[in-house]
Amino acid sequence: MAKAPTKSPNNSIESTHTIGIIGGGIAGSTIALRLAGLGLSVALIENGPSLVNGPPICHLHAGGNLYREISQQQCITLLKQSIEILRLYPKAADYRPTVIAVPRRDRGTPEDLFPRLQRLQREYQLLIDQDPANQVLGAPCDYFKLFSRLQLESLAQQSLVTPPTTLEHWLIPVAKSLDLDQLQFPVVMVQEYGLSVFRLAATASLALENLPNCNILTNQKVTSIKQQDQQWQLTLRSNTNVEKKTHCSYLINACGFRTGVIDDLVGEKRQRMVEFKAAYVTHWPSCDAIWPEVIFYGERGTPNGMAQLTPYPGNYFQIHGMTQDITLFKQGLVANTATSAQPQLSDKYLNKIDQQWPSDVALNRTNRSIDFMSHFIPSFSSANMGGKPLFGAQQIPGDDPELRAADVSFSDNNYARCEIVKASSALTAADQILEKLLFLQLIGPSQITSNSVGLTTTLTEHQISERAKQLTKERGYPIELAMRNTNET
Ligand SMILES: Cc1cc2nc3c(=O)[nH]c(=O)nc-3n(C[C@H](O)[C@H](O)[C@H](O)COP(=O)(O)OP(=O)(O)OC[C@H]3O[C@@H](n4cnc5c(N)ncnc54)[C@H](O)[C@@H]3O)c2cc1C
Image 1 (cartoon, helix red, strand yellow):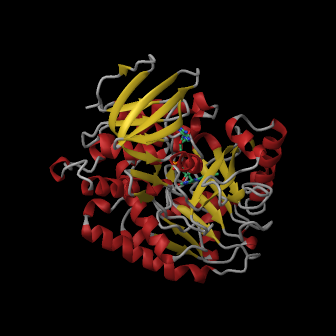
Image 2: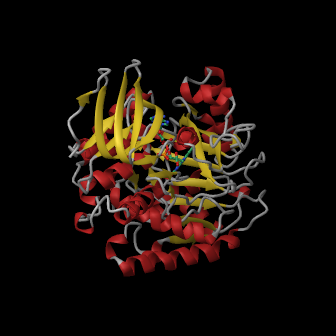
Image 3: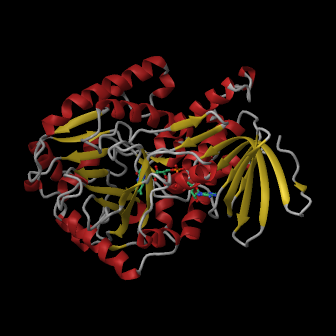
């Protein structure tokens, strides 16, 4: 258990824990859940007012199928990690498939995708053979399915089915709305689901609040760090400028795109990049159906980059468009320098993160995202801005901007840094830290009694939905972003 806070000679509050985690995003919160769930005393320190309040998360990358350019091995890793994260946060997912279409204007072909999809299907089967509880993406034989133009034309004639229960049902509204002349065939449907940042935040917060040995310190920024007598001493400053100290034996840096700031404070050198990106919240009032997610492939950074349509209840849709005018930004991808482990984003992007967007910029980019999507879905041109953009900076360890499956790295002074690129990698990172703590004998093998899943799966749908809705209100987004069209199948 955490020791009771005490007053230091200079009257600031002090507390001592075995583990100190800086950063309460999905990485830090999941690590806290894993370690505090086993009885370790944990301080989770978060600068913002609530947990999992960083860049958006809308898609569970269960197979990495959104990224044609990444290696097959990264896709397999993302599949495995997504299954683990889905087992930990089952009520954070929207269980609807994803349609993937290759546009005619694209240089690739649908056939290019088949070998990887078949390999992922086999890997999914193997994971289920190892543990039947891994079957969280439906039957392996249904992991993906191909649809010809003829099939889409026939589906376009059928009546909508609510709720959709087969892949064909899910495709009906899409087939009715797509401009089929823009696409190559077949199109793919794959069991990649939605993942809501608000529902993840709600689940992690509720589960951590149930653990008395986890000290959640929100509105607290770590401003200085010292290591003395095998102990890390952290100085925290609150949003009302009150200082306090926390001590811990093992320090975990999970600061997202600001991981380099903490590396600099502890004198650790590290190579990394950060990328500022945004997605747009739109409302399509004339939509009369429950949609799957839809992806139109494209070459990243060109005017024909990938377009991603993510559905929410109430006719809300989130859009990514991988062009410089929509999701990507000029000089939005930066690397660190020889003198600092923290890549420096330009002030205009930091201001967007720390304050707010100029309203004309938000509206212009949202409108461009609607136009971009209307190229494939002409009736989407009647959509309008549905809320402020979802945005943030994403950390990418190393020097490969296409890295998508990343986790944790260690120094030999009781310090770990967690740099995930996708939310699905958070539990893998937590388990790697746990192994390190075992090695260092900060935890004994007999203490590893559970896999943490019970901490989250006992929370009710009502509890999670209510907290997630509260978070959307606090963060200024439509409550529909906290809701989902489908529950677990
Ligand atoms: C536009 C966009 C769309 C994305 N879509 C998806 C998606 O669909 N699916 C997906 O899996 N991923 C997606 N990502 C990536 C995903 O958002 C990140 O991988 C994820 O948020 C990283 O989580 P994290 O916990 O490492 O970092 P963060 O969520 O950034 O958390 C780090 C936390 O550390 C805190 N912090 C920083 N410095 C300090 C300090 N000194 N003291 C105390 N606290 C501090 C911050 O306040 C922050 O809350 C997207 C990213 C972007 C930008």
